[in-house]
Length: 365
Image 1: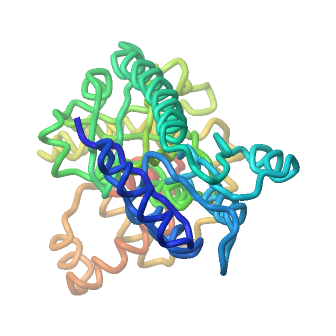
Image 2 (image 1 turned 180 degrees about the horizontal axis):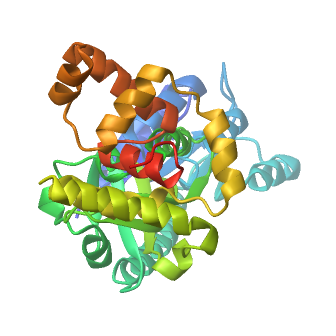
């Protein structure tokens, strides 16, 4: 078991040395700082398990140190003991009112200091064990997919998340979250970054992801930022939504369904069944439930004549090279137009673009 880390902040060098030597002898790993400013820097650097801090110090007193650290997620739950020569009742009340765990007056009784430290560390250990058990229960929940995501990698996944996504933990090591998101990936990633940056506490959305077997599935995603002394990242929960929850096709969408059937049949008959399969897999993620929404969308998305021509050919299953030859333009021009189409329709790939275009009657086959 690793040694507990204790940071001692005091501007009186002899006492600082005495306390750190005593705690080192008692088996702790100690760090020291000679004033409040240095103490804050050291706290962020070493992430201590407990902080002992004098009140009367130059530059920044102990109360100011506590208030500053309280605003920093990485250390704001660290047990904090005030150490001071001031024994007035008001000072004692002020320290505890801030939320400090103890208030010890000088001259020090080392046995009392040690007892206070052990009591605080034992309490925080019991709290951490409780959270650890609760997380273990959540991790083994058979109904909710759980993952921890940090440094742009899936750090941990549970069995349910693996079942939903279809990838093993080893396979996910080579994938980022953005690689499996289909709908509104850029918007979602911006939201997740705002959670990572502590701008927002959490994010909850319904999105579409692509499974290992290339099938699309709609999920409800809840993500929250976590930070401990040793690591930080995003913890997410995933619930797979059934077709009933994700929305069924209404009568007003029958014409869109017919268009899908036409394009799938057309692609299959043209020997492009793989593209047809991809379109079938993503069609659920781009549906709109009314003609009025489709009409508004058509007015909002303004395509040039050339973009419309290229989109039509993309929907018919032509490759970039084939489109370039057919329209007497360069491959680079086709690439540029395809990129513009993806941007204007907020779709991620060709299959999503085709499904979006047909579902919203931007093209017809």
